[in-house]
Structures are given as C-alpha cells and as structure tokens.
Length: 144
Image (tube, rainbow, N blue to C red):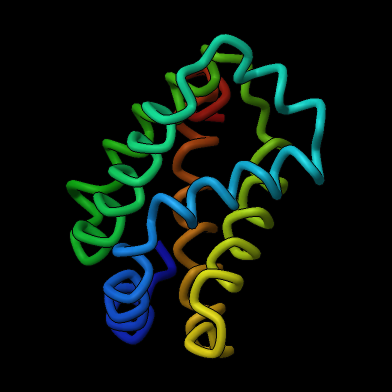
C-alpha cells in the first residue's frame, strides 16, 4: 500500500469538502465515465443508478475512513474486486474509472483540488484498483 500519512490526511481533508456534494460528484463521475468509455454503460443496463451511486459513495467513504488500516481495508477491497470480476469488470477497466473519478473530483473541488490533493487521490486509487484487481484474479494467478 503506497499511501503515506500525508496522503491520508489530504484525502480526509478533501473528502470533507467533497462529501456534502457527493451526489453531484457521483453523477458527474458516471457522466464522465460513460462519455470517455461509452461501452461501459452496458455494464449498468438495468441498474438503479441512484442505488449504485449510494454504493459508490459508501465505498469511497469506507476507503477514506480505513486508509490508515490496511488490515481492514485490503480484505474488503479484495472482496469487492472479486465481486466486480463476477460482473465482468476487467483489469483494463480500472484506468477509465480512475480517470473519471479524478476528473469528477477536480470539477467538484475546483481550486481545492491542487497538486497535493490530486496526488493523494491518485495514490489512493492506485491502492484501491491494485487490490481490487488482485481480488478478482483466480487464486492460481494471485500466487504465481
């Protein structure tokens, strides 16, 4: 896990600013994702996007809350990755999601999304995506 104490502090500070706007942030995240990767919209066909947005918001809040506790965070991310692999999410899909998240955060936070904040979110997303990808791999591939 590549999150420093500075990253964690910055994540928590910026999430405190973004969380009150989380509904708009999440809506914008999906707009950006589907603009950049329209083929991903099919994965959400028939999905209650309000409920999906609440799940995403809860997941982000969990990551922020547990960022300093890898023993709690990583097992949850492995499990989430396993479930996402079952939905058809491929490792290469994580880049589009990360880009959309960073862009939506930048738009939502405006001037508060400085280089330090961007770097912290990028490090957090790298941790999240790597753990989820590992969790989605068959056990034989993980131990290789």
